[in-house]
Image (cartoon, rainbow, N blue to C red; front, side, top):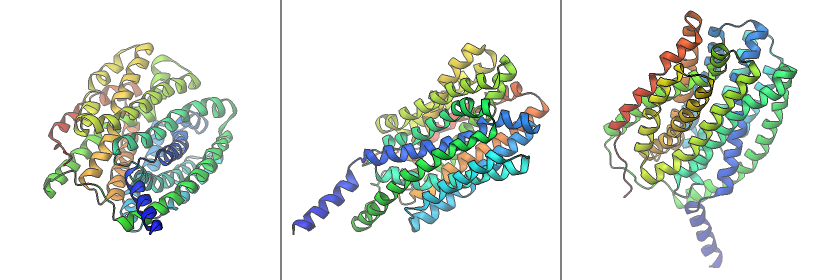
Length: 402
């Protein structure tokens, strides 16, 4: 009898408590995964110089990476909704590790494309299941859990340019092999999480734990809300593509900086981006996710419009403001979508991650073409209008907890 009571209590704890050890572990794994991803845009100036690449080819490299990182995610999420795979993330990290080794030795455009596609495939396996794990460990504090998870990735993205500037720029492309260490550490952490995930799945199946009913919307309204979220993601990530892919080229061209100096300015923006992610989830829990989404995308518009016209000091200031504001949206967007479709966590998480990466891919390719035909500074003039699209968030329905 005591064992039954203890098992019941354990199940209840698993379902209702916020498991911070798992949240911080999956966040750190996200940091390592996205650190490896951040290597790709960080070495663009080196690759462009070494192999005489055009901006169009740089855009195509990003397109290849983001396409593989986006294309498989909804399918991975849809499959794991039906057949959860606690150990699948290990395979994702192995793909990323292979991609790092490959790009360290790549000596032509097509080899580089193959290398980034390996890393993209690893990312597409990692994200949907990670979003599910952070939800399981949230104990109902989904916004907070998503922010903890997301901020790990953002810090990894911020560290990428800094480490490349310190390790790769002075010593050469083959020193990218040092990033294999990040993949090995990631494998160790993900393996530990996988056993918790496996045990938790068993308890959830026994208790049939799921989201509380957060909304009473018709199917058409749910579809309309998701369509708005996808438009917002287009605005946010198309603009983000101009920053993540071409910002180093922008400050080099406009302010005549060295590659190493440009990487440090990129780090400032990415650090601000990570900071904003910390705020977005808890704010969504407190004031409502709709308002966080609306203000974080549309609220960045005046600063984005001002950016092309200021000096280097104010460029850094505006990039900090833009990074903090615009990055607060995605944790709120993801949890809002999960509350719209609580029984399809993997599919909706994979769809949004995949669409976000897809927009980065498309944005990078098209903006690279535009930069070749005009100039990198003209690209920033054009992209400054994209956050204005965020005004459409006004039409998102409010989700009230019963």
